[in-house]
Length: 251
Image (cartoon, rainbow, N blue to C red; front, side):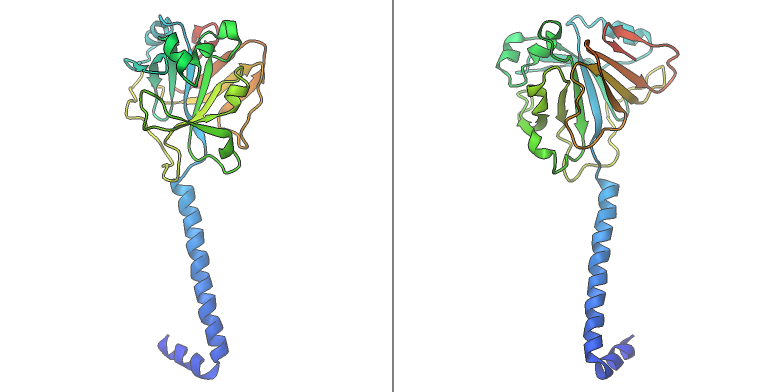
């Protein structure tokens, strides 16, 4: 290789310089390709993180879920937001049963969750769609930053569409988004269920305003136009029959 290099220097200096430039260009292109491949490996597009549904504060859904072999978390209060929850956690996503526990807090919070909690009166959607992943450059301007009072160092990206059209589910992106999002997210709170269910695989939401506001579709998520709010969750595992949790939510 050294001999060939010297030979080219002596006999064809112009071609030698061109060869060096070509090699540098090949290295640069190779590096860009590697970064692109690495990006596809380590980073991910938007996908479902969790789904929430507003329920009555007595949470009758809990007994139905437990009787069908599902294990729920003990719950958490969202201080300053006016809500609390209990959740069914799967490997990579979860169902959150959320309810209003302080209307006075909700009235002072920018999310105005009391409107969704009282959806039968206000017409707002009782559902929420939480995504995770990288927001595209085309869509990022549609989001605003929300610092939840119960965790003020966290930034959740809220979509403006939810304020403009409250009849559409609350749409937001969890703070795991960014340039260091792993391809697979697994929840440490995942608890084994008797049904051997490990994930929500499909989500079908009926709403009076089914327009999807993002430039990309979300795998497993679909909408249909109906006067009444309704959501169907498809969960893998041994679930022989449809489980009706309440009048507008079924598994």
